[in-house]
Length: 199
Image 1 (spheres, rainbow, N blue to C red):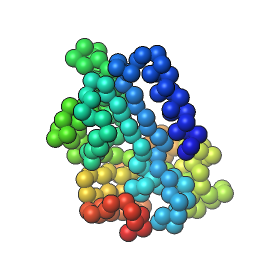
Image 2 (cartoon, rainbow, N blue to C red):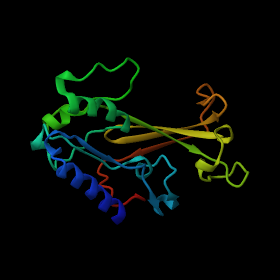
Image 3 (cartoon, helix red, strand yellow):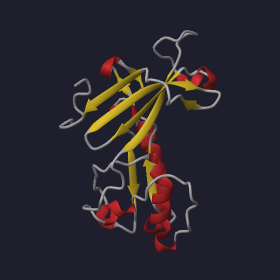
Image 4 (cartoon, rainbow, N blue to C red):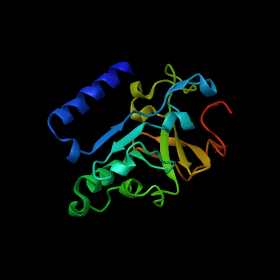
């Protein structure tokens, strides 16, 4: 963490040294989350709240009042393309091709009371075979796509997280949505301030 922090400082220092701060949008995001024993899990390959949340920090020089402001709005990494385009070019932004997913989050910079861009967001994570079995889990980065037996798909709104586990066909890179789910999970995050990840 200290190494990453130091390197972010070097990059931002170079932006300042080049005199680009007034015209440069900066976005900092990280990989998906990490469990340190919460829910009996280690690492980051789950569909739990901790497993899919990422750090996302964006600075827009055109919106100085937004500096340091946080939002509880639901956002996705998919939103970066549209957001960076809008923040970088404003009304002169080039048209975005049909089929490009994500929402433009620039309204959140213009007003703290802006309507949230999403009512719900999505994530997915595979459940991978362990040591050549179809056991609980092993790192998916060492498993060929065709060997992934199950995929978990989650939808999250401002209170609930619902996850459904389906058989996965890695050859076609899709789940079987016509078959009965292998399992479902529903979590109520009302009042969850993130301090008790096992609650």
